[in-house]
Length: 392
Ligand SMILES: [Zn+2]
Ligand SMILES: [Zn+2]
Image (cartoon, helix red, strand yellow):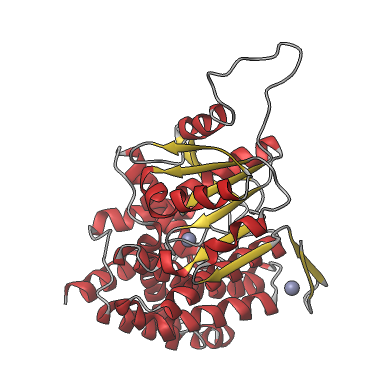
């Protein structure tokens, strides 16, 4: 468990994460980290097994603590079926049973992968009270240290609340080989923090929400670092990838520390979530999460910029003013690095913004605008401004 004192009203923050290693060759430390376990059940998909799982398996076998593995097949979604699949294979489904004793269990679940594998293992781990850890394969999304799993069940997508992994291993030698879109998705997810934290400040001042100044400052500092070194992603520089993973850790811990996802997400994530939902409902695979978030960030930034120009509220102006340079830097980065734009149809963009308003009862700039009868106008104007910018 991580524990630290804080100057905010909570006084102290706690998170159940034991250890996080972000470095080249981190995977070699796997046996040492899991030395207290005897039967490690490893979960991968076909791709992550090839990239890192086979290596993890060999290391665990050599240490005598490998139980068995399950490889999820094909395009893996975080749905009830795959969660059930991981559960059924918790022990050999063809093994004999002892009718006087319940099925044996592994004592640790190791997920090898990024978003989906992590989300699935987290749910199974939490439901069965089995500790789990994740060996990451791509710095593509901010959910590594999260305690919630976005899951498809009962015909919709919702976050199942669980707990954080005990261990996170990010081997930079593996991560730098991820596809360029995955790297951009990761940094795009981090850019979302500028809106997330500004929304949080807005909620503090206009809705009386709890706010932690120290955690917010850490998230902004981690995002700044990503922006600073992010141009190096072109050459797959380890430094930029390390910054992204450290940013995910800071925001993940921030969520665990505060007990809510404010440190990681605001209206930009809710809008991205609305687009992802629409894809799922249409039977399509959602776009990379971080790319949607990056787009949500740029659109909400347009809303804030318009508010800054038009509001008479001096306090609001001063709040937004601090973030204007970040918005400009994000735009410059996206232009220079050719950030892929994933949702580019005006009606789809607008539908997502509208849907975001009802998707989550969380005070963000969307609520601020709605309460003042400005929502429609700002949504349309921001969608247009974004499209004009990318079509230039
Ligand atoms: Zn605090
Ligand atoms: Zn995210």
